[in-house]
Length: 347
Ligand code: SAH
Image (tube, rainbow, N blue to C red):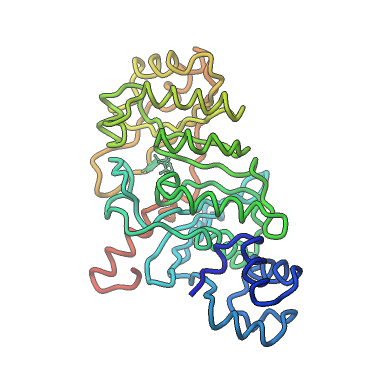
């Protein structure tokens, strides 16, 4: 069966042309899919016999809500979606002054093994298809009734480890006949797969690339992030400089503040030295404590911020949203799985 939602408009046009249909039919089909239609039967402006033929040869992916949690503090909504094969992924909807941002997952689980992250605890199960990534945006918008203007790829998974599907997703969500979300409204976060960052640079997309740095020195970064053991901080920052030169887009560095691990003055000074003159931006993230991990949130976030600022670095501290609903990605899926093991619901 053909995964129709993962196809671009021109691929759908080819498919329909092969079925003897005029070009405008593809726009109709594409537009139904990108408004969240879940069956060909409801596509009333397509001829009956075409609907029947599509039904026989194609599937329309669509997730169902396995769990939904609404924050009483700030209205953040967290969805646990169940996919067609029973696997679950998380999506978070956050309201900001400038509009609604959705945080999407790119894989079921993750291979990267970062010490502080809940998403990686059970390893990677599989990549998401482009359609399944898009579905998170579509169905979050439909279920919540809140129009989505921004997307961050900061949910479960390493987006650059699922490069082709993620790129296809970006093309789909950016398409004027679909959700038409501009690249400048999209951020993609990576643990720093250098070859894939170079490959992404070739496309010259206007999205914001965020790199999860979390430490300015190899000893600390390798302890926190296994990916650093093969490619150290030097090579990563070199790759980031190349990315900026090629795309003209400044990279934003994420830095989760962990008590006694990466929050010393010496580490702030080293970070400032390494980023000096790049115009890069550092986003400090108060660590979300993961039950299975001994790592604790830092109590030095403001001091670290001030020290970086004194050395000319642009710094923001991520606002904590949805603290009452496990809104940190990976945590809800984790909890649902634990409960399922004990005989509760969820996957
Ligand atoms: N794999 C990608 C995107 C997923 S995570 C990446 O590594 O960037 C999005 C961000 O949340 C990353 O910066 C990640 O390091 C961070 N993160 C993961 N677990 C966290 C936790 N418990 N507390 C704070 N930040 C966390």
